[in-house]
Picture 1: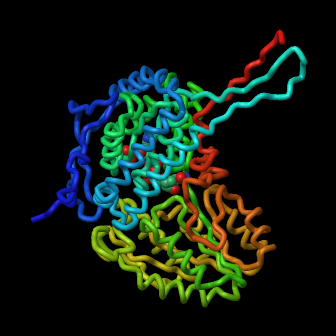
Picture 2 (picture 1 turned 120 degrees about the vertical axis):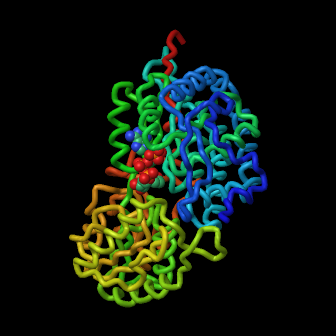
Picture 3 (picture 1 turned 90 degrees about the vertical axis):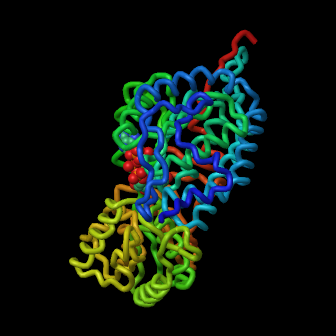
Length: 488
Ligand code: NAP
């Protein structure tokens, strides 16, 4: 007898399966199946919205915009703070939904709920600090002023790996700035998004301000196209693969939309001879194996200097063999199921490719059962391996060797991506030289954990456009308007 984890929800009303448009649940839609990636069992049948529903949501958001824009920042902040409090109050249920549909360990899911809620709190506060400018004039008879105004209706397309945080990181600044939002969550993880809509309704967000269009893979394309093509939608924020990011840029070209893109990564992690090795191993575990390696900022390539190479790989392999692999609901599990079969296949392919090219597997290397891939350490990695160029998006740590600082920088930068990088050293001069030379939007120095609502998150090169979080994260949702006042 299979017991659905959703039966353990304390507040059953958080399990929503209809799409949420204009403050109402759309019951009359096709449905698609949402499954537990760890067991393959169906969790729910969820609304499969299409182009028509997207147009309905766009019209609702467009109609709701003026009243929302005209509220004071404090009024909007009060609603966001209420929503934040509700997320924290229901953290256990939200975490349960997340582990059920995404697979990550329950403790990590709880951490994500708090991280996701922190964006509501942060941007509720930031929204009240949006300021314009007065500029020293070029003409005594004129005064020059700058207003910062809400951009308008926004759309957000989000991935499955952070089912709540990738939504609030976009929605919170948009709402705080005065923009309504339409969210299209990933096919695998709509339940978290819909629970968030239920809490938005309880917090008192007006109809049309926050809309969620769940859809399966095929309809996601249709909904995405409708959002991109609409002239009413003035901004699109997307987190996902670089490949889909390129499609969305093309689709948005005719309507010249503002774009915020958080795309793929291929993070390097550099360990210099002078590093504290225990701390580097600790950072490596956090950065590489969180969410089973399915995070955009997780390390894809380890570069370790010759003098500490064997010490580092041996110690990392020891620690990795201790990691507990299992179902995300089991107590103490640190690495859980991958999201789906193609993800397992990619990891398997990267491991066998590395082995065929001389990689030494020091820990893991096999699929244990279902979608549980053993946390893996591969020594003697080389530049011709797939894992050197492609995002593995799984629990595999390939370790390359280097000799000099210049070589480490060149190797780290030899990718079209530029999201996160990490370096371990105790030489302050080297830390500055290397951090400044790394081509990435974020650098973790002597730490493997960098994400927080207070800091600007985003990439350079083909990892994206714009920044989320921090005081900069609200900028993409605001337009500058210059007023030139004559006749003074
Ligand atoms: P994905 O395949 O690009 O999907 C992301 C979202 O886009 C999903 O909602 C998906 O819907 C939707 N989508 C796919 N094709 C579309 C299309 N043609 N038109 C409109 N929407 C479309 O990425 P993923 O596999 O879910 O996520 C993994 C990737 O995200 C990795 O590359 C990772 O690095 C990146 N990521 C980046 C960040 C960051 O902040 N930079 C954060 C997290 C993840 P369906 O699910 O329904 O197909």
